[in-house]
Amino acid sequence: MRALKPARRMVFAVVAGALAIAGTTALGFWQLRRAAAKEVLQQEIERSSRAMPVALSADALSRPQSLIHKHLQLRGHWLPDRVVYLDNRPQQGRAGFYVLMPLAIDQPFSADVIVNRGWLPRDFDVRARIAPYRTPDDAVTVTGVALADEPHLLELAAQPDRRLGGIWQNFDFDGYAHASGRKPVPIIVRQDPPNPASYPRVVGDTVNKAARDAAAEADGLDRNWPDRGGALQSQIDRHHGYAFQWFALSASLGALLVYQLVRLVKHARKHPS
Image (cartoon, rainbow, N blue to C red; front, side, top):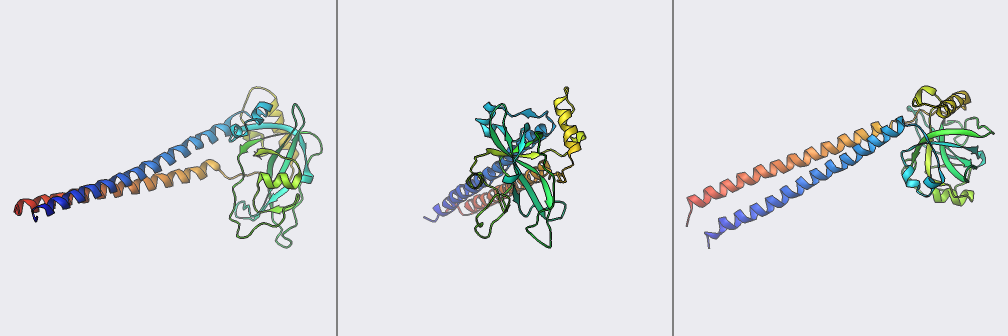
């Protein structure tokens, strides 16, 4: 019976060690897959930021998820009475709001697209006072990158009844549709900065004219958007760091398993009975 003990211990060590090594190795590869997925997304974002804006089509509206991260060109009229201000959106260390306003597209189809027109600083004396900005009455051409949504912030309590023209902690399409009575396209377009140099160089007049119009608009809104690619890079680096830690733990467990097996073999040879 005593002769079976080292063998049992050896089997137990091999099984337990193999499971631990397999688990930590799998977790390391899982982190690498997450990093690879975000690298693909980062490349897509970089390509869209350099690409020529494409006009929104009726066919694309039937597949709104296909528009995410695309550089779009929209033409329509602003609906300033249906604006929403997103709270707690800092810009370069200053507190402020995002201005989310629908753009009514009339031709060649009818749809409302929520556009993040830019950022406004908060009034520290009267929190609900919104800084002045300008909204053109005529038809405008807007270009920007489509997002699935603006990042959601932690809400410690339920939001009060949200109304148009009010300050919201987070935006959601169902709540907006309920407040406005109109269901928008489920994307948010972050409007490009009004700077012609920020637009891609393309052949043709449409985009260049839109850039000139945007540069001349001077609406008082800051569109110095956070670098989404840079934020993703920090997440990619974090995943690589986690993967290294899991692989290092797996290697340490492997070395410990080998060490324990060598000890058991030596013990079995010294005490064959």
